[in-house]
Image (tube, rainbow, N blue to C red):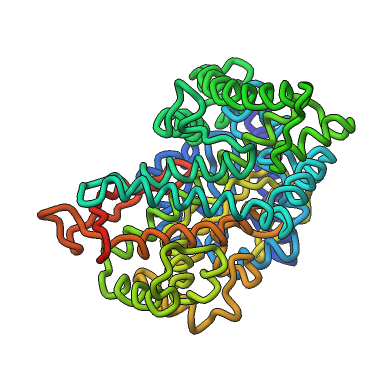
Length: 499
């Protein structure tokens, strides 16, 4: 009897405490965001089947633009509207500027050295970001490498000219060209040709393997106290992929160091030369050189190549829009044989096409996850717990029907009407293909030059046809998402020499 009274008393106390806490929450204390009911241990993982950005958008339509999920034992808050994104970045950017680091990215201690994963409060992140901003993506740095980029785009056009009239894998061809463009601009090497055993396909497979490992559900991320065990082996496998790419980059650096120590000191005037000067001045460590090159090389290549493929796919799907772009090109370029980067400034409709492709098919539809590093973050009236992962569904934000008219349609004209206000730098947060705030992609200045330049060159050099038996209505634009958004069926088309 005594034990039963004790149990009844304990139940009443717990109920009273819960009631009082509910009253406090109702008198001004922010509540936790709503979300689907989690299951024990697995949380909401079973709710996330299918393409993640589509699934999160569907759940947000039920639970709201600020939504809470349980991913195993990890709490995630998903932001899916412009208003919520604006509040997060404008009011809490500093508190949300850390990264939720997946365990696979910890392989070879990569996340401790990479500006992709270091928190923005870390002095190393600030130093690395400053080096890249000053020597690669500054107006001066971009201008210095313009001739190299234009030459590599001409090489890509020449490669396709040799295959005129034949069916080509557009994405693969562009990717090889972009790898050489980025590597030549950064360290004066065509990696597809100059690195003997490697090819564009081999490098891409290594990069995709790393992306796959980072994106895969991992017990180490869902149940953090099991992380040291690496139960699924993703960290070990990723270490091998990192090692392969680092071996290539280290070989390039070592050859350049050997050149620098020889009697005939050759200078290339590229990013690697600038890094070696910083190395000799003691401002950067040798180990950091490989990581810096990896960060700018891998991120830049993927973003540019995938965006070009999506833009070409939408143009082939919409021949009337392609005709408008071609008319603009002919009017501006006339008989000019090749397109140069400055020509793009006179091609507003082509720029609108590229922006619309980014809006509908962002390379990173789920921006790399942020992490709340402090208490006090409130979005949409809801509390974001310290330590939680914060996910911005850029795909959903850029298709928000409250912001975009006919959001599911490919309508480049929308960027002509709103060109003054809709920019790649996310001032109003309705268009964030490169992220926003402190974590805005540092490669944006290069992408906004190179992507439209490549698309213009492909359209100026060739008429494009779909393979025989494939109509524009049948072209499959289904998406496949890991941590980047690609076509399920790679785009195949026929470049035809223009007469």
